Length: 273
Image (cartoon, helix red, strand yellow):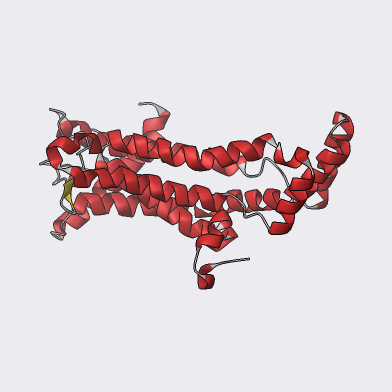
């Protein structure tokens, strides 16, 4: 058995089945859907400290952007001096530009593992579905004897929105909601720009031509469209997992570094400076 199955796939699958078995024993409706939500939320909360480090690092980098723009204007023609001044700025403010990358890299295997587990757990049409799941379980007490009920809030978790012609238009709301939630999170990850900063950047063309800012602005709109497109072809259960992750991510982002560029669209009582 490979290390991926031993240390990631199997533990996550066993957690999912354990939660499902417990809820099913209590005769709770939609046990599988609730299990996906509980497991997704649990993993997201376990990774909360790592995500917090990533968000705080991003926040610090955003705060330094006006200084980086000024260094670029003053020393952009001299690459050596430019790099020296940037390094000096990072050192003065205790910022490591790579600090936000490591937490993300650590989290990625868990995201991929959970996705693969749910993808396998939703393959109900597989002739050997039960045997395939049971072969990864640690205890016979968790073994499935029948296929789980896939119904959750009136929709089958194995259904895909691209099957709307057979199940109805209402299922198309799922990729739309998925894309909207992703847009909200992407907008929050974009730092809000003060009127003063906008005025200064307008005085210097170098600031407005910053490549990373352009890419970030484009991704704010491109990423939600991509996620909605993927959700259109994925089983509803996978969208349920993704949306759970996104909602908790939105809450965490708001608590740690505020609503970002979404701030101006919020009611006054929810806005943060």
